[in-house]
Image (cartoon, rainbow over the protein chains, first blue to last red):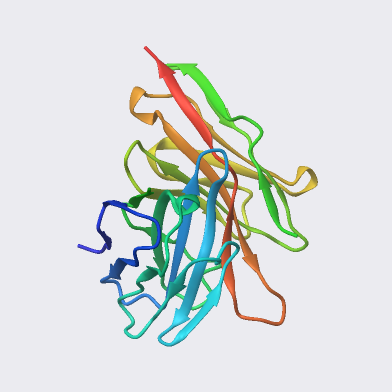
Length: 115
Length: 117
């Protein structure tokens, strides 16, 4: 089944404790992206990647890192989480490298609480 | 700068009634437009998209949307709402940086739809 998977689905952590949220897609998509969703703000893009070893900042990259060492995986790293990073996070992928015209397929989301 | 406005934060309709969700965009060129739906506790699913051609596009689950360039709008419609349509709906525009190869989806803030029995 074609899908985007994220782990963990729920995470509670404390300020400053490094964490990684994994994202994997099995559709051989080139474009992958991370969004955060906050009430009243909709979805905002954190980082995106157009191919292996090619990543760039989205609209709200501060406090986050990403890597794209393999085509299928795009982990989101919070080196020193803070409470303002409490949010619902979505990973998405699409076929083409730009992601602009293509349908983006979303993972189920990761709900993060930073105490 | 590109932006998407969904003027209605929350809409309630009766089951069987018609539905229209509004979306206005700001973009300097021909936009790529999308509607996504998010059911409670779920990720986002694409309902429909517009790139070019016929301005009335059909999507899944009986939804349609009409692109009106003169009004910078891409409103979502459904003739008869079902209780299972209760969800949050997001309009998005595909942003494209001229001279670059970046791609991004700019989302509206969403409209939550409630359906009365």
